Image 1 (cartoon, protein in one colour):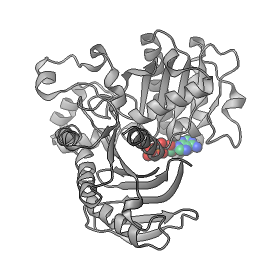
Image 2 (cartoon, helix red, strand yellow; image 1 turned 90 degrees about the horizontal axis):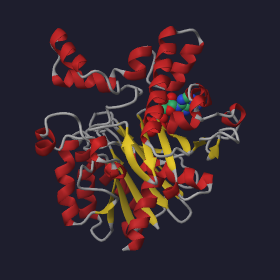
Image 3 (spheres, rainbow, N blue to C red; image 1 turned 30 degrees about the horizontal axis):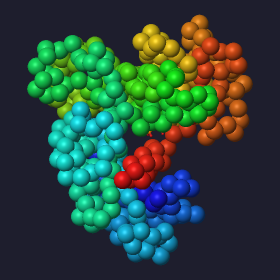
Length: 403
Ligand code: ADP
């Protein structure tokens, strides 16, 4: 099945055309700085993926998508000569609230509920919805699916998802924990079950998505029972530029002391904190590791804090599970940084998670799913590679094939 995957953000648009049978990408598109005058869109096609750059300055995200559809129709190198050759569309949606517990075909009812979710992620959902609206117009015969970051976590029990605030905040505004990175945690759990050669429903897993954002999930018998992200993706771990969980009283304290506006405090917590805020070097873990190697003490502290918070989350979830068979590492840092994995698991051996240093650091193993714990580690440690667009394409294929 040929699936067009659309991943629209507040200032970016990532699309791929994926042939799910061969799991191969036939077209890749990345537009950045969308909305600004110097916005651009790079489009490339199988097999060479030589990029062509288009100026999309001043366009809204759905206008950039319309431009991509034109390119797909008109470019002689395009793998399709007409949009009707695309079998389905998979849209990544950040927030599905309590309306969506799984990937969903976008019919009129789902569309209405999608619009109701906009207030839960005001930066992310509206551009994605604008793209869906455009696609409903341009490709009305093509089934469209919404794949949610939150859906996998809808199995969390109330004790995990409720905040200890007055009940009316849940009743009136649905303020609760929704989690994020759901497709990644679901995929990582399934891949780990494959590696372990056991059905997912028999396993207790702790999945760690460690990228520029990061979250950890307790997956008990295939279901998310708790996760570190909350009402928004700001809660939980320390991340590239996000603070993660802090004492909420700090926010009002800083606002009072420095007369900060709501937008300023939002930017402080989401864009200027985390690894960047502590290291003062970068939000990119590679650069921070290099700086620490060169003796930068703030960079070293940022790494120590980053690792410590992950260790505490893994330990905390271990306590909530009925069994733990494996810890699964995925995303940019989880997949690629043997150094950070070594630091994280150095503190967890006493819980039965015993890293094999050689397996952890095999030259050329990046991109290969594998077990990196010692043979008799009571709890296995797995590394699993993830690709968001391919996951969305597969979920879309699975749903549309069943129709
Ligand atoms: P996102 O998709 O959320 O932007 P990624 O999953 O691509 O994030 O992860 C990006 C993070 O992964 C960056 O902090 C980057 O520095 C880090 N990363 C990638 N490769 C390595 C590596 N070899 N060592 C350490 N960190 C790495």
